[in-house]
Amino acid sequence: MLARAACGLGIGLVAGLVGTAAITLSQQIAMRFQGRKPSSSPVKAVSKVFGIQPIDMAAEARLNTLVHWGYGTTWGAARGLMTVFGLRGPWADVIHWGAVQGTAMVMLPGLKVAPPVREWGATDILVEGLHHVVYVTAVGLTSDALCRSLASAQPPSRLPWAMLASGVLAEGLRRTSRRRPERISRLSDRVRTSWHEVSERLPVGAGR
Image (cartoon, rainbow, N blue to C red; front, top):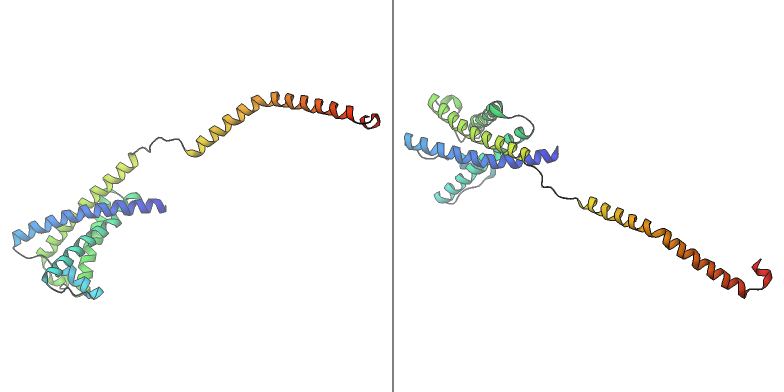
């Protein structure tokens, strides 16, 4: 179970990276059409939680990008765990979307880095939801594909060292068993000859 969870985390992080790339592209397209700048909510949330204050606008932009990619990649781990434990396909995507969207709508207003949801407006909620649809779809497709590929991969055919050692030992015992009668006969001849030599040197009473 631990190995499966570790595998799911690895798959999820890769899938989260792919999903973050997809939502980043989706957000950039939406910003061009809407004519607005990138959101600074990620860097504001990190600054408020960890007390980090960027020294200038360039540092703030770098930190904002880092938090954006780290947050999206980390959320992929949840989908990876669902995948390896059997929850896949559209239903897994729906659950994943609900978790990601719900967290965004609760966490950011809770940290007071975004207005309450009731002040967002229908268009903002719709656009945010569509971005997360793009994200969870990319994550889900990647995660499920990686899991299927891993399940269908055949392990390399190799001879375990224990099996090789046992084969060598069995062959050695077989050869030894063939030579044993000959060695025993040689040993018995030597013992008999030595006993005769000793008995000839001893007094007659001792040889009885």
